[in-house]
Length: 191
Image (cartoon, rainbow, N blue to C red):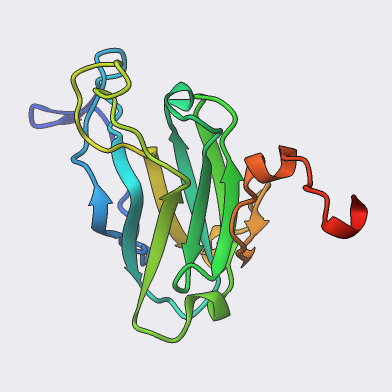
């Protein structure tokens, strides 16, 4: 380090800047405790149940939701679908999950999507959940849905140009894959 006199040595220097107003998330329901894995002890992650809710103070402007997550794809009978929503589940994005790889989704919710309440509930809903013990995976008897590595909500105007953002839209129920494959039954007039 640099000798600055009087037996002092400067080993580094940091600059403290004013904190920006972050949107703080409050886990409400459907969350298990944070955990780590032996292979990545410095990375915390949290399992959800089938449905999980976090709340944040409504900024009354557009927000971006960053979600980095995965799940155990093989534990589901059908390919799972994640729904990220606000507004009582009326606005959001449905995300089909195609494997067990970590994915990153960036979703823009307009101020109108958030409503005019003081708080906004952000819901993460899986099409189904699983219990590892019942699947013969391990002795974990918790209901599991999504494994969340990072969840961040920020004011869109403070984040600048962000690539690969998807705008939330009106939600519909996920299509039933069985219904698409089932042959149509002939009506009496067709016989």
